[in-house]
Image: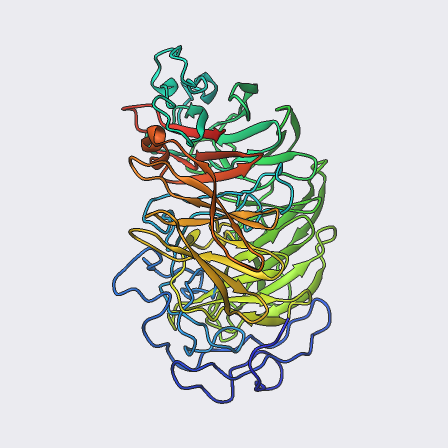
Length: 589
C-alpha cells in the first residue's frame, strides 16, 4: 500500500505533523516505519492540535443519526471509529493525519441511510449512535466468490413459538386465514420476486426482548428470539427442527457460524436484576442439536462481571468478552483455553473482533490519568499472546472494526468532534485513512461502554477497497468505493430507486446492495460490478409491492443474501400485545 503524504512526525510514533496544513488542504505528516517488538507498545498515533472546522461528513447542522446524546466512551471521549468522514484539511487524527470529518459522525444507531430504523446485516459510558444498513454476519463483509454462501453483511414465558407460523401462502388461495399466512404474493407483477415464506415472532414480555442473529446455510435459516432458537428450511420455511427452548432470555450470540456450521448463544441465568449473561450453549445450525454447554465466570476485577458479555469467533477460538477481561474457549469442544486479563500497569481488555484467521483486541489504558489511551493489539487466537500493539493517541477511542483482513478501524474523538477511518497493515502499522468528504451511514448501532467492535452492518471491504453508503434522510443515496491504499474515492454509484441503498457484502467480484422498501414499494437486491468499467447496478431480486408494508415494517433488522434468496429478520421484539410481531421473511424467484 502507498503511504500518506510526505513529512515525518516526531520520533517514536504516529505523532502530530510538524506543520498544520491550511484548512481544506491535505495534511503533511508521515507515520514512522519502525515497529516495536512483538507485544510491546509504541508512541501514539498522533494527537489533534486544534479543533476541527465545522462541516464535512459528520457535521450536521442539528442532531442527527450520529449525534452523541451523551459522552460515548469510558473516558467520555469518543474514539476515531463510528464517525462519518469529512473535509480533508481537518484536525489531525489518531495516526498523525487529518481525521477527515467532524463529530457527530454520519451514522445513527438503528437507522439506515433513508431514515428507516433498519440495521441491515446482508450478503451479513453511553450512547452515541452510528446510522446504517448492510454488512455481514461476519461483521463487515462476507466471504466472496461463492454464490451459494451467505452474504450478510443487534421476563415472562413464551406463549407462542415462531414455529407455529406457517409459510406464506404462495398464491394458490389455500391459505389458512391466519394473519401471518396472508397471501403475500397476491397481485404479484411480472418481474417481481416471490415471498417464499414469512414467520411471526414468539410472544415477548411487555418491556421487549432481543432477537439477535440470523444465520443462513445451504439448508437452514436460523434465528434467536427471546428464549428460543428456531430453524426453517430455506426453500419453503417448514421447520428444520424442533425449536430449542432455553431456560432464560438469549443475551448474546456469535455473529457468524464456525467452519463446522455451529454457533454459540449465551443466555441469562435467571430473571432477577442480579441475573447474569453467563450460560453458553453450542448449537448445530442444520440439525438443531445442542453441543457443549459452559458457564462463564466473572472477572477478578471490580465491576468486571458477566451482567453482559460479547461473543467473538476467531478461527477455532471463541472469546467471551466482559467489561475488563475475556475468556477464550475451544469453539469445537467448549474447553477453556486461556484468560485475557490486565496487562502492563494499567491496560484492560475492552473489546474483541475476529474472523476465520485473526483476533484483534482493543484495550483501555490509564483510565482517568495523564496517560489515558486506547491500545489496539493483534492476538494469536490459539494462545492469546500479542503479535503487535499499536497505541492510540489520548483523546481517541477505537470504536469499531470495519474489517479484519485488511484491518480497517473506525475511531472517534469527542473533544475534537472528529472521526477517523484508518487502515493498518499485518504488523499494526498505519498505512492510510479515508479522505473523502461525505457524510456516511455505516449502520454501527450505539456507541457505548461495551465496544461492540463488529456491530457495523452497512459496510463492505475487500482486499483493496472500502465500500460505504452515504447518509440520506429522503430519496436516493450513494455507495462510495474508497481505495485502501490512499483513502481516496475510486468511484461511486447512486441508488437506482428514490430510496437509499447500503452494502450487503461482496460476491463473485460484485458488490451486493439492498435498496430499502417503501410503504407501497418492495425493496431490491442489487449487484454492482467492482472492476474496471461501468458500475451500473443490476437487479437480482425485485421484492413484490404487495408485501412492501411488511418489508418496510422491519424497523431493526438483519438481512442476508444467500443462494439466490433474500432474508430479512428483526433484531428486537417490542412485546406489544395488540398484534403478532414480525420475525423473518424470505424472498426468491
